[in-house]
Image (cartoon, rainbow, N blue to C red; front, side, top):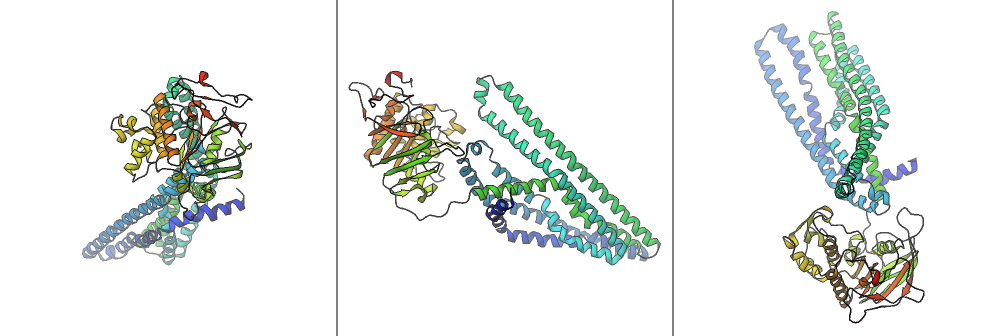
Length: 592
């Protein structure tokens, strides 16, 4: 990332992260205050040793020793309570930070997932980055930063004892700091590679778990296990290599610190022999030096976690900068069911060639348009653009005379009913899925949507009815049941326009009849619909049918039902040029 882009990220996503942290400024102030008292109370041990050696042993006063012991016991109790209190406050500050950004990060992930196929398939790294920052903020790592400002105080105390003691402590601190910087320089790349390899392995394992039936049904079990094992072994190799290298620095730092403390004791003993310090100062200096170097030693031990946290912050700031929050828009009145596409050119996110080229049409209240055509003709791309999911490269789509971006994502979704080609249901009840996971769903609106979609009786037949618990992805439901529940979800909230992408792909005869009635009811209420399908039966209620080839639309003659046939046996009379490639007539229609 160049400096210009890095500056943009820091001003955008970095500002949001700092703002979220700033909301806990009072908690951080409390932690700093507790840390001040904790570090002051750290002087209890050295001062007690100083008094014991220089007063108690020389005076042989048991009363003085008992009094000092009682005072020290109280001070250590207070230090323990304050240390525990600051740990609890820090944990809550980390939790508040994650809670503040959870929704924003997930929203950014969802927005980014609609921009490219790669983003849709990658793991939700933003949430992992947020959790990494929260774990660091709630752990022992930040205490090194709160305690570090007190290191000069301990060094000053050592200089007051003797300048040589202070000089040794300063040299020791510089040496440990150099080791910490070397550790960062030598392990940063390995830590990043290990984290990336681990995320890749975890993502593949999750894919295998989600597609367990496919893996087992196609005999892919051994191959999938082998591939997952290879990815996990690669991640383990990187992790072990990073751990080995960081472990060398951590062990060296710890050993060196213990050696330097012993040298401090030795230097104090030498000065005591020369009569320049007392034996009490000799012991107190060794303890103070250990306390002065503790933040540096703690930082070295927490360095791998700190590196992961810094990388997570950069990644999170980049995600938030690339997907800014949706700006506030002036509320618009509920639109009429008038949708118009003008010279629409749309490409899939990340694609260079437009899948939709120069499409124009107008949808009026009480009408329905059908779009037929072969696979990969651009039909689903067009529907995603009409739903406001994929912005056009040129041209525009309007609803009620206003372009889609004037409504905002949440408001637009309430005015457009969307049934995607790939039906996705979420863990929860049938009612919650129809209500689009609304935390406070309108029960009457849920039932009304199911009735309009012709799914009410089917849902009542499920165990528990609307309270039937849907597993992730809609497991335990047939393809037709999932599709009819998704159709009811599209009708939830009485949208003005309903966009149906292959709504009959899994429906039987009864389901197709229910779909016909749903579209007819929508038109009777002055709503409108756009239907994409391969089967002619889906266009029974359409006023106009268009054929799409190579990203362009051309008209077909209106739908007509053959007298004496059932509602599932319909045909389309096409233009004299013949049917488009990939079109199946009634005789070629696949069995439901």
